[in-house]
Image (tube, rainbow, N blue to C red; front, side, top):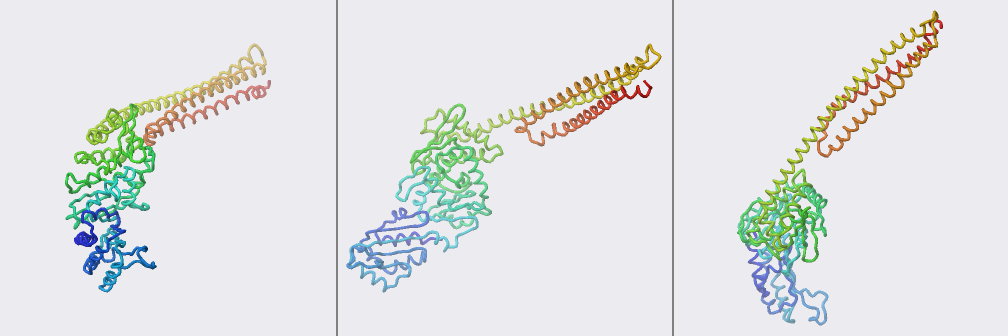
Length: 542
């Protein structure tokens, strides 16, 4: 697969005077483009039919090639100055006319473009949920992965990550995030992750194994991005689809000092910092990430790999540093975890020189992850202890209120019972008083006795006592509901209902039932007392 591609290019461009080692300078992400504005005609005259036939056999319709005369060399100027163009295929007659025309000038313009996407399609390389890309020269791919321009100038960390995203995960996201797989000629390497793979050299025969099976739901990347924007301040909108899991390598085969691996791991490190720091700010080539805690802040500089790649020993620790990102984002406590990461890393970087910050984070990545686990366990233990204490306090409060409601129901029952007994006593006493010392029943004394009793019951046992009971009931109920409201953020609704809900509701219903029943009995007793004061004397004949 593609075995003849590079030799065919090297032989073809050797005719133009280009050395093989210079060809990677012309390879971009999707195309290999060679533009020679002043190609000496003595070089162009060396092309024969075999050169054009061979390049056409290897690349078919995936390339275009043109030789163009300069208008200032033509007298008079010609509307079409292209003297040879591929496609269509070149015949010997075309070539003879070409040699005849270039004999009239000293230089001409040469243009060659190879579309690598067409080349992949021609080879039938495709798979569901997977985007394949092709690099012909390892040097060109290293330049791309390192964040350098075609001219070899290093980009900033910001531009480098934007370039990654725009080329590998371009366009609108679908329901599934496509996996990006780069195929590389002439360099043995095999890197494979969930959303990125790099297959090169002798491993190219296994290109289908790198394809994504089911793909990764785009919702995962969207969730990570939204969580990041809600918790981290970016001076610029760095990326929208590129997240650390996309560059995570799970397994593979590579040389320890492979510059491509170092470049990829440097990019992954920058992404992890971007998604975990408290703030990322800067401009031009200088970008600083800041971790903040209550004790102070710590800074780390983000470098594109082309400016300062990671050393192999540090590159090997990036996966350990990724575990910190994973711990922060793949948790039900994401907001708290991100805050813990920021605080822990800030304290680690506070006393480190800025130039050593990246090395400090990577060298101590495993220790920092262990420290996060310990801190979180202690935090959760304290929270659980606090929750347990709150649960116990809530249970005690519920028991106290249920007991209090029961006591008040008993008190109301005793009070109304006493009122009924005293009603009988008042009636008998009024009878005795009305007939005492006189042969005739005195209705006035009877009325005074019954009205005084009824008025007493109305004011004290009924109004005063029942209003006091209702106020105390509302105070107890309000206190419990207030405590439950404060605990809503700490205890689940199910746990709250288990501790307080059903027991409190039942006790509350019982209290209200007895309260209104007692109120009704009081009203009946009072009305009967007032009625007896006027009806009984008439019945006796007073």
